[in-house]
Picture 1 (cartoon, rainbow, N blue to C red):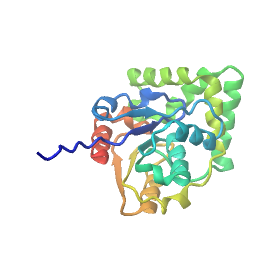
Picture 2 (cartoon, helix red, strand yellow):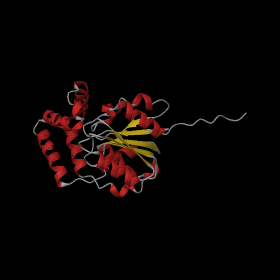
Picture 3 (cartoon, helix red, strand yellow):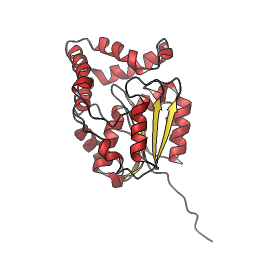
Picture 4 (tube, one colour):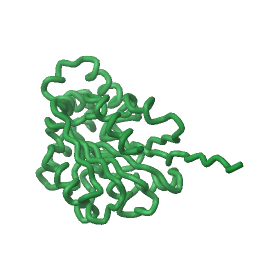
Length: 238
């Protein structure tokens, strides 16, 4: 009798974005978890992308699928730069490969200053205005979910994350080195990392990349368009 061969899905590492927790991926978890080990990277402890990557690589399995949203994408790019042999496939959601500039860092400095003065609540309110599509700004359920994640990260974690984002590297040279199946997702109304930046990522990777633009969706695609993102991630992992 021939032995039955059982294929075990590769583990999946999820990387949250700025001011986000594992709850960022809560809508996708039930569909992705059966039979698969899922880990969520800790990116609240360190103040550089490099240190976040070191922490991730020290705790992750030997080989894994990797998914990051926004700041999570910055971390994912650095993982792909440092340890490409460990990544089996890559999902980049609502992120950019471009480096920071004085113009993009200036508002981050202002938010850090507010957080240091004890006005973190104001920071969360300001961020909400940019995080979701305009039609979702009045969605109190979503707003409270986003606020709960921010409160869990806290002002100190937020400041560390902003410092890491402001010091990140240019990831565009990494794009041409990515040879694993890659999913690039962006909300059509993403005001933080707009579609042209996602198209740059997909174009830089080439034929290994699948590009998905979601109409009526802002920066938090996993929460704003959960069914669409879940289906895309399931196809990516298949």
